[in-house]
Amino acid sequence: MAYEVEPPKYVRLAQTIQRRIEDGTYPPGTRVPSENQLVQAFGMSRPTVVRALELLKRDGWVESRQGYGTIVRGRPAVVEQKDRRGSEALARDESHAAGRLVEVGYVPVPVRVASALGLPKRAKVLMRRFLVEEDGEPIELVSSYFPAGLVEGTELESAEPLPGGTRVHLEARKKVRFDHVTERVSARLSERDEAELLDLPEGVPVISVLVIACDASGQALQVSDVLLPADRQELEDTYRLT
Image (cartoon, rainbow, N blue to C red):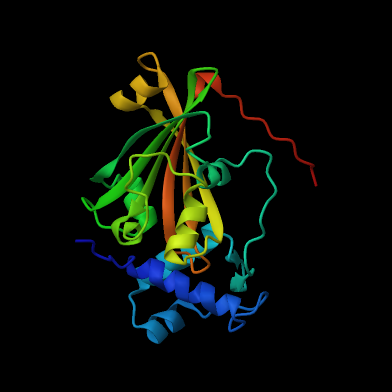
């Protein structure tokens, strides 16, 4: 039986403030109510309010200005990028992509993924793991995680390659709408099974791009951990100085 799990209080508060920004209750350029006002208005503790505001600042909805408080920025602008791992993970047609589906099944949710999905520790989530290959060599390992409540009525549990990509499939089957993606980049040592799939020598780290795909309210619908062998990557960016 699948159980729906509510996101943490601070995530729900951040989602409520996002909706008020989008519907014009908190217009861009105006101040967000103070921490004390938010505590009183929503009946939540100050730490919960502080975490919600930090989340909104991180995602670009609001900003702090010295002497003015917290100011509404509005919906974060989509930044044009040459290389979008998140878009690729959501749109990948497993039936035609270069590579292979290596694992499908329910697993204990990883800590970073649990935080993004708003799930408690030790909750079970569905994982689809796809190994991207180029000329027969593994170049990328994508582990995508889905909350159990979103899986029912879909083909996500199928061990067969999924045509069309997860975004198209979920939007058609569950009537949800993917709105924006947040990507978090970090480096770590690979797990043994990850190293074997990526054919990594012992001690070679991986670059992890945690892709958090959300609806307009900020609720995460899918989280993908994209692993790239660090010894085969070169990151480059060019930008204008102001």
